[in-house]
Amino acid sequence: MSEALETLDMEKRHEAVVGVVERWLGNPISRALLRLVSGRTRHGNRLDLALRSYVGEDVPEDLSFRDKLASAVTKLVIDRGSKSFGVSRGKMREYLKDPIIRRGVSNVLEGIARYGVRRPFTSVAPFLIVWNYTRLCNQRCKHCYENASPEADTSDELTTEEAKRAVDEFRDEGVVAIAFSGGEPLMRKDIFEVAGYAKEQGFYVAMATNGTLITRDIAKKIKEVFDYVEVSLDGFEETHDEFRGIKGSWRRTCEGIKNCVAEGVDTCVAITATHYNFEEIPELLDFVGEELGAKRAIVFNYVPVRRGREIVKEDLTPEERWCLLEELFKRLVDKNNPMTTYSTAPQYAVVSLELAHAPVVSTHFVSQESMRMMRGKAGALAQFIGGCGAGRLYLGLEPNGDVEPCVFIPIVIGNIREQSLREIWQNSEVLKKIRDRDKFEGCGECKYKYVCGGCRARAYGYFGDLQAADPGCPYNAEYWERVQKRMS
Ligand code: SF4
Ligand code: SF4
Image 1 (tube, helix red, strand yellow):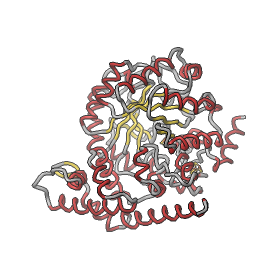
Image 2 (cartoon, helix red, strand yellow):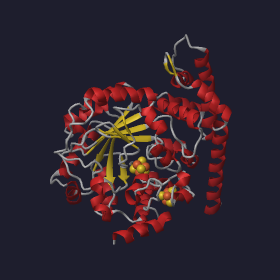
Image 3 (tube, protein in one colour):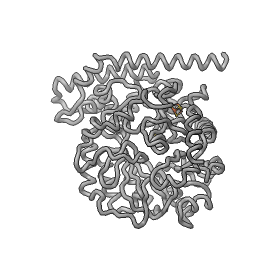
Image 4 (spheres, helix red, strand yellow):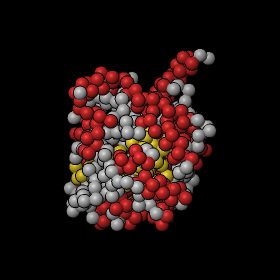
């Protein structure tokens, strides 16, 4: 079969799967049933209870009629849903034995009950909250989106008790994962106490750190509490130290990564791509895998926000970004390369889709294993969950409780000291705007709008409008030219 025909065949398959999901889960009867069975019982989250029963776990004997109905409906929905994506019932059961995956699935099903099967999908509560836990940092990076520094004013930050109350609220709302970021989260003395508390409450707990404070002992503590750690490394020694503003930083970060790896922490190296390091990245990826032993790397899109605005001229061109994403994707699907390589650039899904024979990267939270499981079907999944997750699947939280659609979008949409998470998630006009991809300039006319949608933070950073075009994409070339003219 010719390449063109295979691509066509794949597109048809995606369409077919999308159709099945929309007809089955998006129809009013399924939605009404899901609405009827979602919610809380005296035994906790009713859908979670139903999922536990689906995988054969013990559930209380005194279930109400509605609880039992929830089990029947959930079984039907999961069986049909997994069939649509070509996943066997046995495999699905195996996956659902993981309480974190179960929490994610019930979040999705409740999201369908509330919002329907939208393209792109909006979950009932954020799947992930990235929590900038403090503005304190022992470095002064050029691209910092938080203006963090060693002298930062921390007087308005949430106290330990407030932080734990926030964790309770996130648990009750069905949030699945919390990623502690900063500033440097390890600069706050209560980080292990609060993150440990989140772990006890059943969250997937992650941390983004500069790694310089991670001794072997700290790595041991990290292993006890965190499921995943992302350490920033922006190049080889000279580039990294120049970028981070502190000499010796590179060596300490590399030590921190090695300490995490040695303690068995799931460690990912995060690289922010700019002209400072563009040429070095392929070699850096080799170094990360071979010398530092990390099994994952993620390349962050540069976003012109806060201190990062000062280096806007160092942003990659659309062509450079595309080329880098292709390099990452080729590494990702290379069987001889044990390292997973992702990017936060939503165009990563498009690049993978265009390299037509390969599975599609539907979101940068997927694992290699789940990609294998979804092989050939991930394009359809990407139609629902793909691309930018800001305000649909994820929220940013500032050290003082301010809530933002994404940590790279400096628009405060509420504060958890004053409002509930649910109130913000359901009523924010800013979030409604960000979820409506059909109205986006440039990206809204693109055939990949549901798979990608462009980075809303970059659109806002460049044009001051959340519905503007992401100028970092070859499909939006005219907007990139506009930006260049303005800067020249
Ligand atoms: S706006 Fe979207 S794509 Fe951009 S950084 Fe935030 S979540 Fe990622
Ligand atoms: S034009 Fe926008 S939606 Fe289309 S691929 Fe580019 S960034 Fe993504």
